[in-house]
Structures are given as structure tokens and as C-alpha cells.
Length: 138
Length: 64
Image (cartoon, rainbow over all chains, first blue to last red; front, side, top):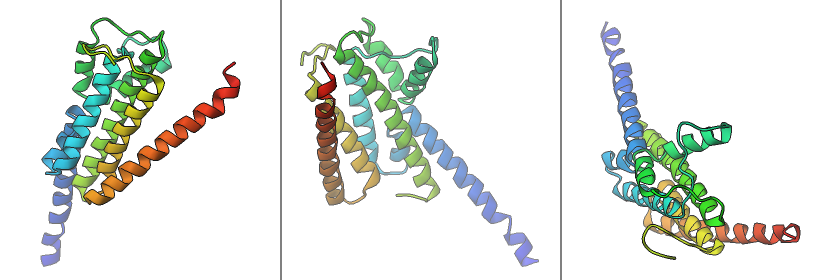
């Protein structure tokens, strides 16, 4: 009998841990570094926030293309998904790029890559925070 | 590079900044001890630059 009462406790704890890990991952996506900050990994939190922020500022400053949801083809949609990976910084990029994208020069094209890389990097960091919260990685 | 939200970077400056930022992020995410992070960042940055410049030279014959 004792075993029967003890069994449900572990799955409940696992479910709670899984939920918390998911929250950490989403928090890390919305605000770069927040997932790690909630896990008290301060160095990683600062590194994520600063590197993603710098990439977004540079990308927008170089007049890279900040894709919107009204894309014309699959590449625009993929670019939009990558840009969305920066979370709240997507809005920052849109607000910084007041004069629109200019990809007629190499600088603008590089800016587009900077923005996409920032998004993908932040998604990777959010996944890392999720895994760390699950206890798989540190 | 100009200030005022209009960055005009050369190809190499763009490569250098990109490589540096990505290397720092990878170093912090994948290593725990500070010395390991520094080693990883330096090594990753070196490889980024080496491969980037290498690919640039490899494409040179096709640029004309």
C-alpha cells in the first residue's frame, strides 16, 4: 500500500518541473536572457541579452530587412519566423528601422542576416534555458 | 561606421562583429568555467574568421 501512495508523487513533481521549464523557455524567448536569469545563471543571461541586443541594433542600423507577417513567399515567412525569435527585440528592431530596409547594398543584406541570426540565437538560448530548467544541462 | 542609427560597415567589419558576438554567445552557453569560456570564444572566433576569409578567397575566381 505504501508503494501505491508513493507512486503518484513523482509524476506530479515531474509535471511541475516540466511546466516550470516551459515557462523558463518562453520567458527566455520573450526577453532574451530572462530564462537564464530566472535560473540564476547571471553570466549566461547577460551574454544572451547583450549579444542578441547588439545583433538586433546592428542589423536594424545597417538597414536590414525586418520581415512582417504579410510576406510574399516562403523565404519572407521563414525570415519572419527567424526575426520573431528575438522576442521583444522584434518590436525594438521595427521601431529602430524607421526609414525602412535597404538591401540594395551589402550592408543592408548583412543587416538582414544579423537580425535573423539574433532570432535563431535567442531561440537556441531559450531552448538551453528550457533544458537547464529540466536538469538536463548546465 | 557612422553614429545615429546608420551603420556603414565594411565586409570584414561585419564579419568580425558577427563572429565576435556569436562566439561570445556560444562560449557562454556551452561552457561553465570562465577559462573554458575564454578558450572557446577565442577558438570559435579564430575559426569563424579563418573559414570566412577562406570561403571569400575560394569564391574569388568566380567573382569576375
